[in-house]
Length: 527
Image (cartoon, rainbow, N blue to C red; front, side, top):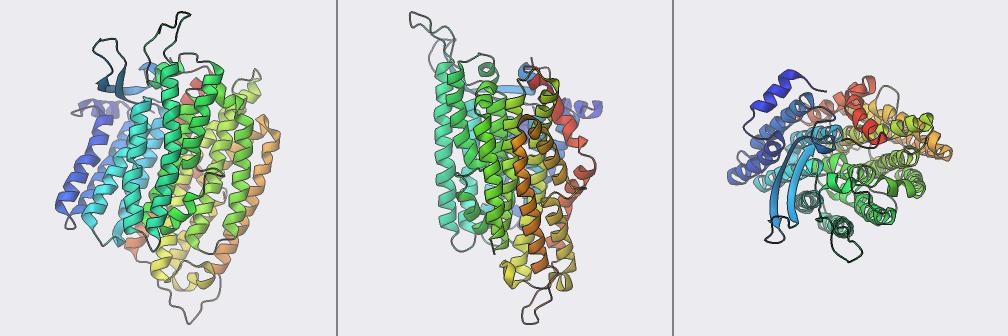
């Protein structure tokens, strides 16, 4: 999508738009810290709204496949260090650039962070420090989706952990410190394995001749690495390292154990960002670092990845059914849905190399579905977590058996919960249905046995309707007080329902952005 007026506006900005989008939250964080509790929330709302506007401008003024190497646009680099005195010595640098995949993830990031900022109205303690961390987190998230070199990618990947650790541990509920430590250990260990893979690929990128002399300068540049034609076994080693780092973030069984605990103990805005965008870092890594850089390796691992995805979906659905805490139920629902992303990745990897046009088309459909699922899930699950957190304020508890007659006492909150629940289990007319349909229609052509994942849909429908029956449509308990949510508490979830419904009716808003990138990958990569 590229409109002339948006392209002209981008060209009029005082600096590269990607750099500007990274710097604005950091400057805002400094201002929020200086202002403290007095004006930090207002500054954060202004900054996140501005970032949302810049994300829309970026999408309107940038083609899905640009003219820069790798099909990127707005490419810019900054050297961090040179490993030697010679001008030909290897360098550590940060390279930024975007294509259609990055554009969608940047839009989702700024949308989720904006909604989380609006829903932070219940944060009362140390507001200056909270909003400082909040804006640093936004900058780190954006950096992940803009990075085109492995070192820059890893720096931003790790930067995200630090503010999230404090947000969970400082503003969460009882037991939040343990949850924050568990979150940090799991995600950091996964990242450490991924970093080993990055350096492994870096050293392998320096080809040696028979005399043991390097014939190429080693590099962390993603575009250069994907064009090297690395040995398949080197690619597989790198892909397994990616699985450890991205698999923890997505997450998949058995690397998921940190997530429910972190979600339950985190404050509501923390849960929104955690589920709405942090998990998408895992899906993005599988696509950008896996399919985009080492497609042959992912193709060889496609069947194990698909099996893990299907098992994770069904396991998480059954586990969600057993939960009594509303936040815990939503957390396992999140694991359930994110496993569909991995299935789409696996189906694409297995089918993209086929000579059969029907299988290639199905592979393309599955990958488009995975990207669409990340955006759709980010919006739906944000609404679910905001409502789950709101129940604590309006019903005094999140325990499902203890909440009765919500429709009678809080009809507005009930309406939001019903719509979000219908979207979560994939009712037609909502974005969740489009995402699941694309993935399953694509994957069953590549792996006919992948239809088993449909069992997870039936379980999800069952426990979601059971939850609604117990909370919303039950008879009120006169001994338990339930109040209606105020409009200030409902504005964030209502705003987030707009893309949920809009994309259910008009999915091409996202698909038209990502399809050129997927088509270029099928054709062997962008120039």
